[in-house]
Image (cartoon, rainbow, N blue to C red; front, side, top):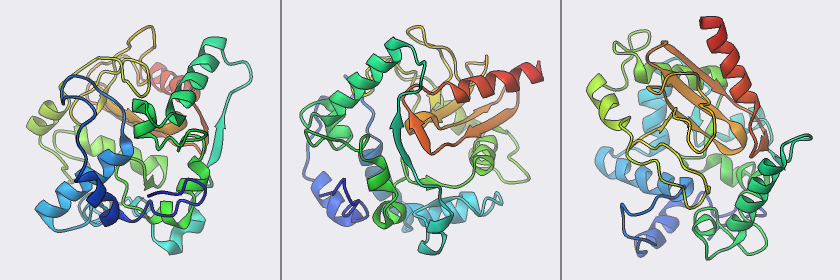
Length: 276
C-alpha cells in the first residue's frame, strides 16, 4: 500500500482503513504491547471522524493548535507550508556512542526490516528496509507531509509542542484554554504496563495516552525527576513533556535522528538544575 522510496500511498487514508478493517490482532489484546504509531494514527483518526465528523487534522487545528496560538502546528501540513519544514536526515550512529547503544540500534533496525516480526509489522518492514531506514523518503514527500498521521505527522516548532503539553497538565488551562479536565488527565496518565515493548525491545511505562517518566531497565528518566510527568518521545530523540509537579513543560525537535538520543536528556537535566 505504501512505497517507502516515494511515500506514495501513505496519504490514502480510506484505502488503508479498508484494509485495517479486515485484519485481526497479531496477539490477544492486553497480553503484549508493541509500538505501532502508524496504525494507531489511522485507527484513532477514524474513531474521531466517526464521532465528531471532522478529520483529525481539522479537529486538532480548530480545537488545540489555533486556540493556543500555535499557528505553526499541523497534522497534515498544507502544501503552501511544506517549504518551511526542515528535511529529515537518515538515522545516524553518533561518534563515541557506547557499543551497547550501537548494538541496540542495529537490533531494532534489523527487527524492523523483518516483515514477520512485531517491529516489521509496525514499521512497514520490507525485508531489506523499513520506515526507519526510509523516514526521509517516506515522510518528507508531498504524500507524507499531507497524510493524516496523528502519531507521526505533527509539524511545528518545539515551543508550540511545549505549549500543548503545558495546557494538558495545567488544572486551569493555559492562557484560558483548557484541553482536558484534571479527572481525564488522571485517568489517561495512569500507568497501564511497564512490559517490554515487542517492537522497540525495551520496557516502557505506558499510560493510556502518554509515556510516563519512569526509569526502567537502567535507563534514566528523560524528563526530570518527577514520575508524575506525562510525555512522549518521537523517532530519533524528539520529545514533548509536561511536569505537573514542577509546572514546567518542554519539547525538543530535531531532524537528524538517532536511536541514542542524549541531547534531550542533557537539556532537560539542565532545565531542572536551573529550577532547583
